[in-house]
Image 1: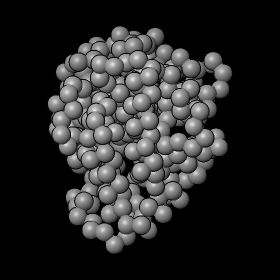
Image 2 (image 1 turned 180 degrees about the vertical axis):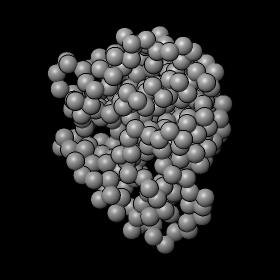
Image 3 (image 1 turned 135 degrees about the vertical axis):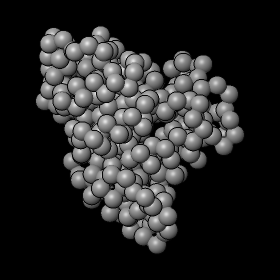
Image 4 (image 1 turned 180 degrees about the horizontal axis):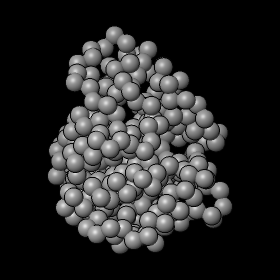
Length: 286
């Protein structure tokens, strides 16, 4: 697999003369931190970048003129994925020597979840084609798969909430998006890493512990075993969907995930997660 540094070199050269105003007050990159963006947040990217979180999940809905709009419901003018997420990421990477942060050593994980009322395969296929065109417009920024080889970029895009994503993506000889997998793929035969590099599940899908009491030995063993199995097959692990609990309970779960070797922790409490990761360290730095 090519290195991130090599992939960034061309992008850095393209924007060397641009203003570096976006780089003011830099925060260390937290590769293990991932923001689950609430739909009500009008412009989520600045908050995520300011905190140094290494990724975020946004929900999008197809709208007119080939655009994808942030959040569910009726499209709101100007609130597009292209305008509020892709273009600013590209501009920042150009303005800051081909990285989002000076210490970035792994791609920023952008998870795009398709929302909206139309969930039939034909509608979702059209939505993905809209996304695919926008990603190709920002190709120098993005991780890509070509000929079965994964080349990391400044940003890696994962598609979620779409029917038969793996089959759809695998049919493209060159692509700039990846499918989301779960722990169910473990032991079921090799899953190409250039198709599903990350396994992701909500915490509550398999675990009942809510952080209020000590975790049971059984659940701790299960967590460690799943993470180890995923790593043995070459996948990174992202855990989301934590219980809606107090900050104290959440920090207990965050700590347990760190100790288990989970690569990425996704949560809605972005400020609390960033503070916890800065204090107690991260599992993975790329």
